[in-house]
Image (tube, rainbow, N blue to C red; front, side):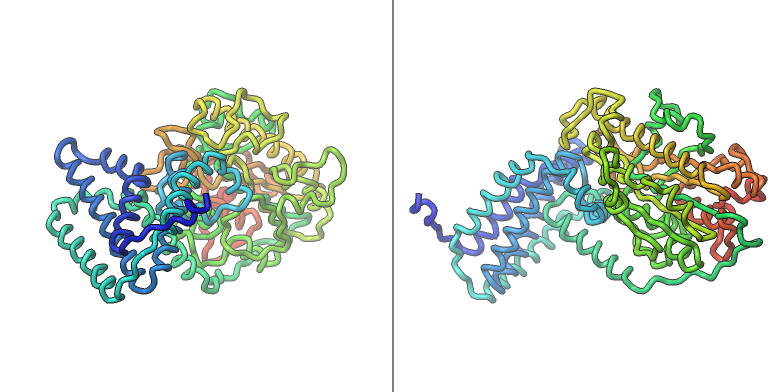
Length: 534
């Protein structure tokens, strides 16, 4: 055994670089080739396109490793190791969930909190890690690479890259194909998909880390409220409109709010299919025109700066930086709860805990409460609700959602909506008991979710090709009687014909508080009776 472990083999740096490139072709390009064939015409064109991709991948990897070897052979080994291990893990997720590693997905991955990330893990990933990652890495480190002269390695790197350019010009008739499908091809080429798009992500993040631009000062119309003005904004997670009975779904997924006099708006399109992008839209005055790294002061900070008490409770992640009077995770909200009936600190019920009492005790005239749910974030849907809310059975209990019958997967997802509906009813009951207050609740989801339609799961698909299930989200509002009377509104009167779910929240929150400034857009304030009348 010792002899086997001590065994090494000699190889030139050129053979090493070529072997690593061929390993990538043989093991890690299934998603790429599958897509390339699907968008190529039958016959010789498909063959030429696939051959072109092979040459491109081999040349890029060989040229890059030879360039590193000109600096240090050990550096080339370290980078090759990182590529192989990361590729193995990336391939697992790409094949399991049908994802693409474009900048949108990288943003989604890096914006996911630890608990949500853990939800994605399954023991099958160990198979990918060991067989496709660890074993090739052992071979990489068993190789005793003959050190070349640095200029020879550098010259070879440049030569390979020059040959690649010559090949691309010789096959320029494929350029139109690359132009038409380049974005999606690039999102499937391992390792360059995550290398390039991670760089793009952090470049955008660095640009956005500049100081936020303050919005124009606002004024409050009319006298200070006689009691309290309270706005509760619920930022749902991955709740798609397609599975709400309000929109024609055959199941009753909202049984608890049937008698709550909700203003149910037509479903609308989210501005993004990932949380970071959608949170930027919802939290800025720009709405769907906002970039994922907008530099403007977000809603919560704007309210805080104008003297509104801001309470932020979250089980999610991906919001733009903000300043709040109080910021707590669900586990912190229930930290002092004692007894058997305490909410699970990692479920959204924790966010509801004693909110009504906290609002009753507050001495502020104006209060904005924001909840960011973990909601229906997959793939562990069956762990997003207490057992008592498992209404639809049987359910999918694995993160390998593609292995579940689609209806079983949908059962688990629908149970998350039933639980969410219960939480909304409980929250409304708490808010309705607050004395001497004008109260409104606004609910919007960040994006939708795919449940196997077209072989897609979860969310984060590039907007240009994302299915409706990832875009279409519910939007609804509840107002207490005091708020309706103070504004001369009715539940039916505020419902619009067209819903802009990620434009409405910022300006409707301003409208609910009677705030006006140069950035206020009355057409997106659902409480503006003059606009609604027109």
